Length: 122
Image (cartoon, rainbow, N blue to C red; front, side):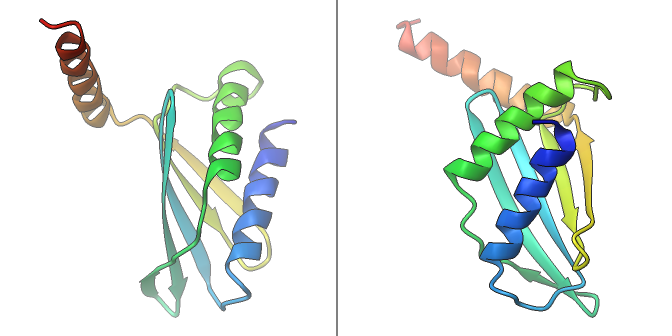
């Protein structure tokens, strides 16, 4: 699989789970860490933003992890990313923006270091 195939798979999953609700675009905000993927979904219709309650779970998280590996190892190589914005349009077009949030990553790394110290009884 390549990047475009994974984006297409994600788009199909989102469209199927949207149950044919009308939209101008759907925005999926993605957070990614080594063993974690989180999703927030928004639907836009006539410039009105609505929370979109889609159940994006294991299947989609696994696709994001695979997408991360692909974007780091196959052309075109994308810079390291821990967040992304997937935008889906009614015609099936998909845009993906890969983001490195250094401030968020520093907080995660600090929390992980503190948890590791606590685990080791330090």
